[in-house]
Length: 298
Image 1: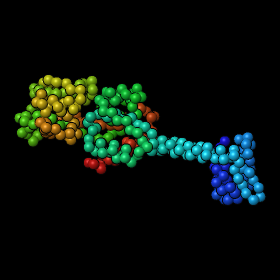
Image 2: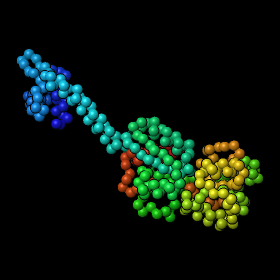
Image 3: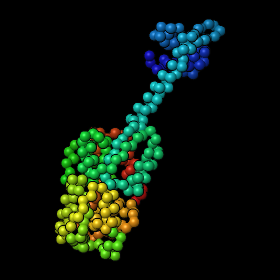
């Protein structure tokens, strides 16, 4: 049965008058009577008692009325849900992001997006670039924010720039280099170094080592940390120094300080990445929102 016929039945049941019901529905009375007769034939039950004085619901009609209303309401909810997904105003989205993306304006952008879109579920997970790319290929993520390098194999992926950051030096608070306003790169030679694991961000790791070696710096790597949180803890504890994204300084902690570096190091380009031909309206809305929020926060 078409849902339009349900509207006809419910309207007549509410008005108990074919003329008023036809006026509400903006159709002529004879076609309305024909539609009600067609419903009764389809249902195999008489729904209305008609006389020249009045129209009343039969027991079958009275039993059908709440079910008809429920079907109409459910159909409207289904339509609203489908429209929401089609326009990117409803649905689920999984986002993996590298630690460098965790800036205050990123957090504020996610928070405002969720607040303004209560029908959307965002599943967020911090990952390394390698983990995020693997999850994209395995279709465990819809979109990722990774440290992008042109040498990456992105044949089956699409990407869009989000923001760029510079490297800064994380130091124990009372380290001799903390007395400098800017630290020349050469002063890092042979100092105890805390590094991230190469497999986490292989392209970035190789670029950093290339620039260090080109500047005559041989880092004395004393610890490899899997997580940036661990790196900050180890630096604050005096285990060594570390090169970190400038967004790291937003997470202040006791015993830790940061200094800009004089010398050439690779830029940290953070890109959105997703599988080709998979960009949904919801994904586009999130990307646009985060881009705009980031620009306004600069």
